[in-house]
Amino acid sequence: MNYRPISHSLIDKFLLMESSAMKRAMPFGEQVDVSSDESSSSDGDDHKAESEQMSNNIAVDQVVEELVSEDALLRRARMYQEYMQLVPIPTQTHSTIPCISWAGLAASIKKLYGQPLHYLTNLCMKQRDQMRVGADDEVDPLEMLIHPTKAESSIWLMEEVHRRTSSPHYLAKLWLADPMYHVYIDPIFPKLQNPSK
Image (tube, rainbow, N blue to C red; front, side):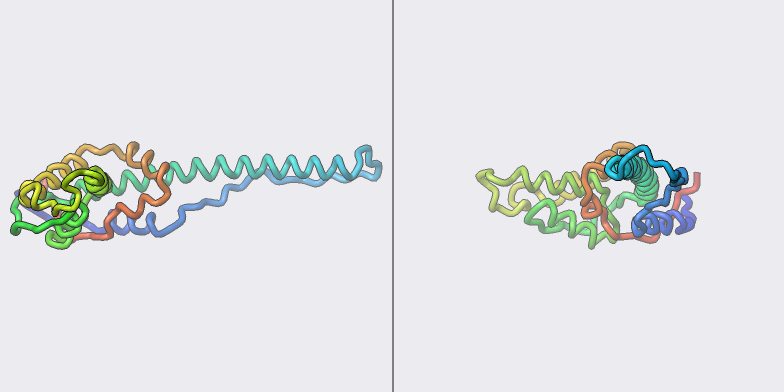
């Protein structure tokens, strides 16, 4: 395969979107105060009407903010998925990595190979460690239960599935439900090369 360097604009756009709050000002119709010399309603009615108008504006603002945040999350998820598809899966293993837990193995892989793992892979590592809680062999290091090479291979297989087949819509849905989703997105950005097509 021939490799050619790609522009880092995709990475820059993703980082910019992640760092910004992505809030937009949405102008709404101007409100005009109409006053008359003859007031047929009491001050209490005016206050009630103002309160209802403010309540309606807040409700509309919340709906607009939710739509904007859903749209922003979908854009972020698309960019993230496109970026992760560009990161190549290693074809050679460096060496046997000793591991105590799945999360520890994942962290070692990230350091050793200098690349991120997919958001969904990171979630799976957390879930695999949680599955061991309460098991008879919970305190045993992972390498005593599964050969480290097999454990690493299983992570790379899962990673390939997540990078190649995950839907940005699914990612956005998960991210919308979890305000702390950033925790599972690795801040590792390797130098990329794009295969010629």
